[in-house]
Amino acid sequence: MRKKVFFICVHNSARSQMAESFLNHLADNRFEAYSAGLEPGALNPIVVEVMDEVGIDISRNKTKGINEFLGNGQSFDYVITVCDEASAQKCPTFPGRARKLHWSFPDPASFTGTHAEKLNKVRVIRDQIRTKIEEWLEKFNVDRD
Image 1 (cartoon, rainbow, N blue to C red):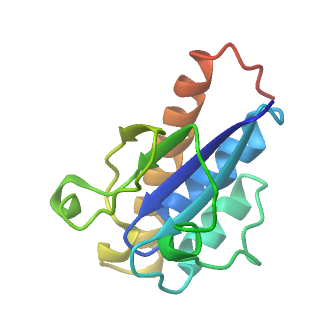
Image 2: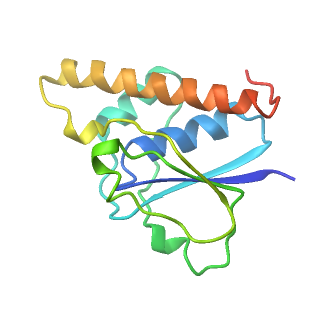
């Protein structure tokens, strides 16, 4: 049976979307990942661009609110918040018996500069999230591609 993982951040526009996509891509169907935000925003186009660079198309993803998952009977094995430490107080919690983890990543929405500068900063976050997912999967002896 696949373990269900729920990634949460403030807007579900970047970090949680990347984490959900990487886990679903790397976990060889042993995990089922979802994501949502406290205040869903618009999908960050730079995140779409940098994920496409590594062969993962999230252009059709929709941002989702945490309320879509609360009260509908879904249960999760893991709930992982991916807010940065500065926004941790705004990062939502999810009730239930799930094991709760916090992985802090900077918010790409806060990045300033030219398009190229923002791309480079988001690539760093993308790669950090992928590395964190890969390290976490190693704990479960999950083979990755």
